[in-house]
Every structure is written in C-alpha cells, then in structure tokens.
Length: 460
Image (cartoon, rainbow, N blue to C red; front, side):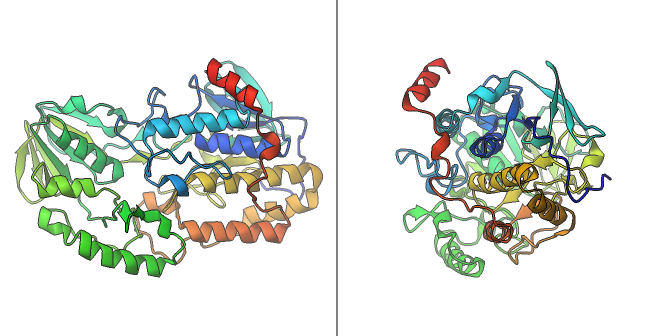
C-alpha cells in the first residue's frame, strides 16, 4: 500500500490520463477542461458514446434499449436533453445526445481514438505511466472510465445442453428468437426487456427464470415519469408506490413471479410493466431458478422442465479494470473499494468514475464527482494545503451513503449508493473545503462556438 504524504508533488507539467470516452469519461474531461487542467483521453473505439454505441465492441446494447431514467431527470449537468426526446429516450437518442454534448464543449480534440490502454503503473516519483497499443504516456493522474457492463457473468449450470447458450452482452436483434423456444435467465431490467423482445417477436414461446422477486414500478405515475417524485424522502416514495402498486399492479405471484423478499429500493426495482402485460397474456411464462440442463430440456428448481432451443443469460457483469494492478484498489465482493466510489485509498491520483450503482440517473452524479476530482487536482498545484485536507479524507473518511436503506446483501449491491444521500454528502464536502458549488452557467466558458459545433457534426 502506498502511504500518501501530506502534500504530494503535483506533476502539473504532465497531463491527466482519462481511460474511456463514454458518458463518465466525457464528464471527467469537461470538468478538467473547465479548470484548464491538461489531459489526454484514450478511447479504443472510433467515436464517443461508450455502451450507447451499439457498434462499439463489447457494448451490451440491443436495438430496443431505452434509458432507464427519464429524460428530464437525466443528462449532463447544465446540458439538458432535448424536449422532443421521448420521456424514456431510445438508445439512438442517448447516443446522439452524448455526441452532441461532446461537440458542444469541444471535447473531441483531446481524445485519442482507436487507442487501447493495456496497463497503467505508478512510478516511484508518484507520476503514472500509461501503456497503450500506440506507445506510452506519462501522466500526473489516471481516471478509469472504462465501464462496468462488458465483462459478463454466466453461471455454471450442471448437466449438458443441446441448444444454444449465450449472454445478453452478445444480444442485439429480436430476429434471433424467430421460431425458437427461448428462456431468459435473470430478471434485471435488461432481462425483462429481452424477454419482452422474445414475446413480441416470432419466438415459438418465451420463458423467464428468476430466483428472486422484484418490485415493479410503473414508468409513469399520474401521467408523469415515476422518477420525478425523487424529491420525496424514501419513506414517502415507498408509501406512494405501495399504494400505486396495489392499485395498478397487484400481486405478481398470480403470474408465476416470486414475491419480493426485500423492501422497495433495497434492490433495483423493475420499470417494465410491459413484462407483466406479456405474463398476463401468456406470451411469457415465468419459471423459478434453473436447477440443471438435461439435453434438450431445462430442469427448474420446482422439478418442472421445458424443452428450450436458446438460453440467454441476463445475469449481470463483473466489475473489471484489467489495466490497473489488482492491489491498487482493495476489492470486496468483486467491486473496487474506493472513497466515494471514485478515489483510490491506496494510490495517489488514481480515480474511478462510473463504478457505482445508484437508484437514479448516474449522469449528473458523474458531473458532481468529476468536479470534486478536478478541484482536488487543481488544488494540488494552487492550494496544496487544501489538497492535503482532501487527501486525508480519502484515507480516513468513511461516510454512510445508503440513505438509511439496507441494500440486499449481494456483491452487486456492495457498490450501491442512495442518490439523495450521495448528493447531500458531496454538497457538504464542497462547502467544508471551500470549493465552488455547481451552478447552471459554470461551463459556459468552454462551450464551442456554433460554427465549430456545426463543422464537427459534418466531420463526424
């Protein structure tokens, strides 16, 4: 473990290295640019967008995907999504919006496209060496923004299976299901979406398997997106949704789904009442967990069996940062343990942006934590006393970001934060350290001109 000295040499002559040009990486880039901190951004793909670019190798995106949070509650700070977008934007709209954001703030010039990072190492002087397939770069800091939905987890199932096995990371088109008996294993929001794709396409029959029950939340309540009630405290949201669910949804066990074994918000709720529609009409059949494979059949934990042609595992992802040595972060339950889910406690100026689960849109959280990171880096050059105060917090501060929610005790939930608690803590931290709080016009000085933006749209 590297012990952080009270004041660390800033290496201000070196750029910050950002790995990845998805939404998290772009947020980091804008924050650094605002404070005139030099940086270089590495992106292995040919354009920005991260997972929202379906042509990006390793993207888990599928044609029918939509944003899980609503238009007006999502998006980058100070750059709202267009009002003509759907309440829950399509993947094409999100990709277009992300690229528009990139051009609006002139972020392309610092990105090295087609450049994959293979390793980062901290040198003895505290600076960093970034190894890429196009050569090495020295940096004062490294910001890992390489995402969490590409290293798929496929459970081991006893027995042998005669049909096709695949993970949702490789799924893109519902035509895959034509004429086939399809089993989707896993009831996250992606699993529910994909099961609905199978039911709506020409699949011979669709099944969904889940070991755990989940709470369903309608995407709209009283005509507005459900996440617009986020201003309510958690107890009031639970009360309101409890009434709505009883009136609008009822007991999901009627259609074969298990009842939830946890309270609302202690795990991810499902914003997919379309799945219930298909269950109610027999287009999808709910099954319990998978016990084993038996040739052409899948045997379930209740002893029932079904002949299946295709098993699609929507069973989640490992958090992987393969280019960072494992001992640079402590890992627990397959998740890197970082201060505020963003700052390495082991290595000075190693950051991870996007390695958290949250019960709301993550984009504005990316912006908030990016501002903290940028302020800290700026202070290392301009206010080393204040930088040392924050470095001490990185080592010692362990805030409760659960908002009083007892999240389900799974590996995935080890990185969960409650949106209101997280934002409140960041505001408190900003005030304590005397940093500037976020304001709507804070990025106006780095916006590209209209002519620059138009020319970039033509070029890209």
